[in-house]
Image 1: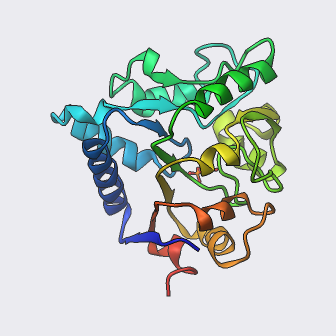
Image 2 (image 1 turned 30 degrees about the horizontal axis):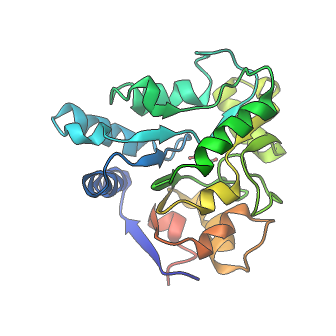
Image 3 (image 1 turned 90 degrees about the vertical axis):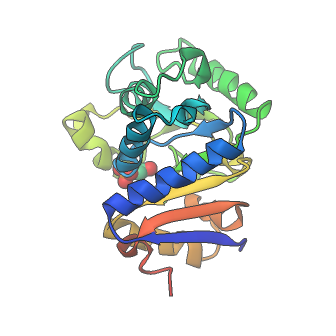
Length: 245
Ligand code: PGA
């Protein structure tokens, strides 16, 4: 296992501040980096803190290019439920990130495989300077569900039952959750020069243990992180409980 920098925080305010400090420091040391940002509940306090600092005058906080991690398939441009709209609302619009600096999937592309190839070509010819990611309780990263190949690239996927359940609240019912999505692959994510994993709460403790304390396996996609260079994990004591001795 590579050296992993585990950072344990005491509460949600510290989680936001320490994650924002990490990002702020990164942006000051890297010129216009390409950055992946995650969706989900976990990064929300971090995004709020970044937006607060930007509005208070830390203007360099928008000096990055955004690369989408994943997206649902079949949503019209601007659908408020798409990940690109969600990230727009939570962080990219408040930071005034230019549209041309957002590399996002066309959810409604007529040929979704071609669309994945378009994104994969961009990713292959770029350097992902920082991948900020979350983790699902089943170990998914993006929409790389259990049994995704470690050599997988950008592609269309079918959502795992647990993921559909976890997203039901956001969609207003389990039947409304789309069944298909697109995602960067694990091979794309493994190429990131730096990775920041954000985890919060007891419900992440079990999967973190499986990710970091069991043999690397495609049954647990997030276990690729064991061999990821320059990885920082920021989490609270509950999330990190089973891996910090
Ligand atoms: P969460 O989602 O932050 O809402 O727990 C993480 C994920 O499923 O990747």
